[in-house]
Image (cartoon, rainbow, N blue to C red; front, top):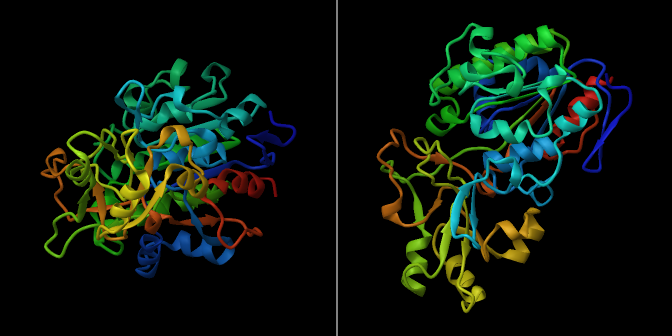
Length: 411
């Protein structure tokens, strides 16, 4: 049982008097909430805006899933926790690997800190790729920690996840990974965990499949947010202090004919420097590329030792569709990134553009809708909503969410 504030990564977290719930709506461009509320489909959100606190926050850059979820989980930017993408290139081994393993995490999570202090933690994530990172430092044997994904809910065990067969427990089949139901499973599980386990801190994080495939105001998008609104109402009525934010926004990234808008940077560097001399890494890459084809608005490039990085950066900055090119030191300073996990240069595309490697390396056949994606500065704005009145900065960071939720829960 928590008895005093907990300090994690230099930030203090108040003792919740009621459950503190943080919801990360993956890919929630603020326009989605505005459109669904304007259509009368989000009455709980309308009440929250009227009676609580509403801001637009900034995500971390790159505006991708793993860096932002772990920033929310640790209360700090990627330069502290080390997770700067979904995907990592190790120059020493020449391997490109997923950054899902706990060995890549360089800072403790707030969940682990509160758990170690005697608090009860519940975490539900849509995709399993985040589960191990979010569960770092939790001990299910204490009976005070639950962490599982919708994607593998039927495979959970008490020893690893804190609960046996979460799908049977919830009474729902495991949803398809490319579905709105994968996120609904998260919300339904959160409501049941709140009722049965009364956690001190609960974290619910969804998938952005709907946001990648449907624009704000589209019927499918509005239906998704109406569904979320029903669960938001249930969590609030149960007395929880709720903070809603997102890991990143989402923008259209396609041409007038619906084909993806892409600058293939590896092809450019191969033309300028010779095939394979440089290596472009797309940190958006993950196992779930059906809805984005590994095309996002942030990339990093490793250059050969004898390359003139300044000249290459200047040439890339002149390419139509490229908004910003920074060397490593400037990128580390501006975006609070771990310098040993990015390349010699960092590139960010304009709002309507993505960055690819080589045209032949992207299989875009699975894209059934015009491309919508994220990763850059244009997807940094995210909602930040609290169902309590609080004094907050005009533009908070999304990784303030847990501190704000605990503070709201302590009132």
